[in-house]
Length: 331
Image 1 (cartoon, helix red, strand yellow):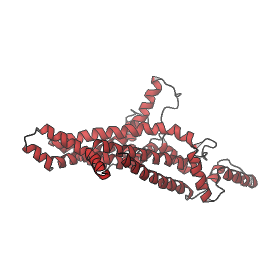
Image 2 (cartoon, rainbow, N blue to C red):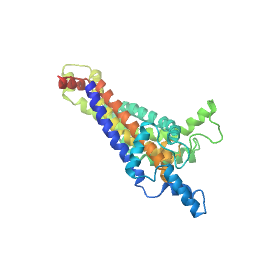
Image 3 (cartoon, rainbow, N blue to C red):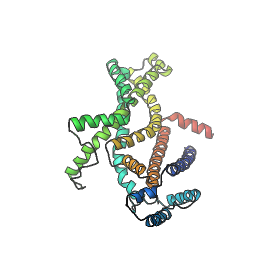
Image 4 (cartoon, rainbow, N blue to C red):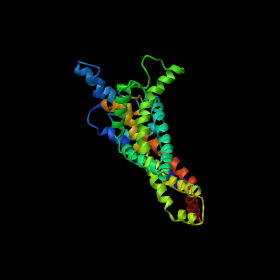
């Protein structure tokens, strides 16, 4: 087990280094000068003063050094927990800006991932043994899983916020309220949270339902199911074994789909102007904020890698065959 975890850690560490390097490179190869973009908002008319300020901020942000030196400085700051200063919100540290947005993103992402996975697998299992559910869940599931996150978010915003007026259309809470631990503010947070969560939940739900339905039908036709049936085992027992075996590919699928789901969450936040990482990405792209953009991508990369590593460990604990293979390999 420990040898397996060590190999996985080595793979994830290498993946982290490559992903962070690409993350560092992408903003720097984008067109435009972030410092000049920042100074353009200051409306400085004196060319000489503008040039002096440009030189000052380039030196301050370390953009006047060669790229290789910027890369080494980035890793040195990363080990110190320093992601730099935001150009867009100067002089605020990038880490503080991201930490304010992360709770909003996690509040949408975690419930949407877990609930869609649990509910989708349950519905798929029921559909595999009920023709009525199968004739309804399967077509609906195909429609949902083919629906883009952004399109569904726009549709929900139009229907429930604009037409019906049941929910607010944007932001994390009403500007008329002061953040406080009160029932009024908590209810307002929930009302702003619901539509972004619903758009994520509904799209992911269809894919899990279809996957589980197909896997259970496959398991019910496997040799061990036919053998148990020939021995006179109860149908309920056979379905229980089929469900457990069908869950294993779904656990693997959860790891594979994490990147797509997170990308969908970021797009959904942009549609609803939700104050999470998605809105920050759009703002940092618009303002060419290198440091904020690479800091957000860093958090996304680390989050996906940690979640995948946890799912890998869970898979080993759930599937006894994996532990047997590891023991045999060690012997």
